[in-house]
Image (cartoon, rainbow, N blue to C red; front, side, top):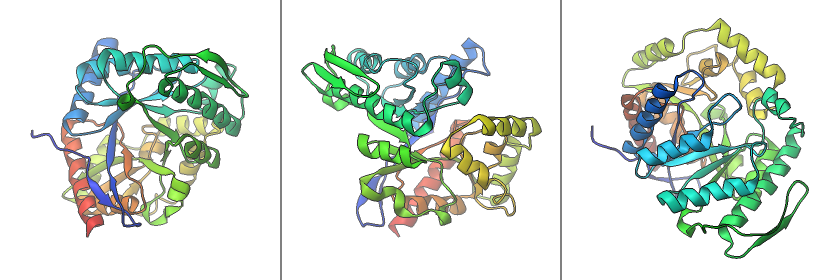
Length: 351
């Protein structure tokens, strides 16, 4: 199969050109043995690289193996793919994060991206005695990320004093080459998340509404918006829906787990998507929330024929959403179908 590239120039509503950036998502470890998991991570990473993805999201929470070690596997088994590593302040000091980034740059010459996580599963936070309220966690996240940025960018020792962190004349060795400075992502569904993304100059990742219900407000004040979404598309609409139904059948147990998670979560995007599940059940439209409702995915899905899904994507792109984080790809062929809809979406935007 000939490799294809997802990085395409598109025209937004302001008449300026933006580059599409696509990230895949790495499989999770909590349903696999070590040997098969390493094999699966390697396979999905290579698919993603062959298909021209910029990078691949690596989750973190108390139930998963360490995201940094998984990212090292990805770096060692690919040539250009950039891990997008979920970073939770409750897990380690910002110096430790900066040290690992600098070390990966020194050892492999590879750039990484950081998905700065303010929250997570409520029970995980309670177990760690992290009881800081939702919006205040974003204040901490700003301080945390600012220290990482300063340590990686400054050739001289860094001194910083904030509400949550203090360092005094701390220097990063080895120094990180400027071209390997990490890209930054922050969940941007809540006002606190959007403000953090603005302050940090980060991509604000959202879990979108149907394209027709979105507006261009997210790109206000220079915030660069991104989207998390799964895609199932085929030439024929019925074929796409048949695959979607097979992959994500109704699952009562999964729905109960989702409902339980809702009760203990203070996540803005989680509640926002959950409130939309009923209204999206009525008619078969490209925007589909069953995988999310059944606790099988943490994002909405777009399902339909190539033109239907491309139309949804084209609307998002025209509104300024040029960074897309896909769900875990089940096969390389599925990435090929995704490529087809992004090609058509780009053509629609240019037209």
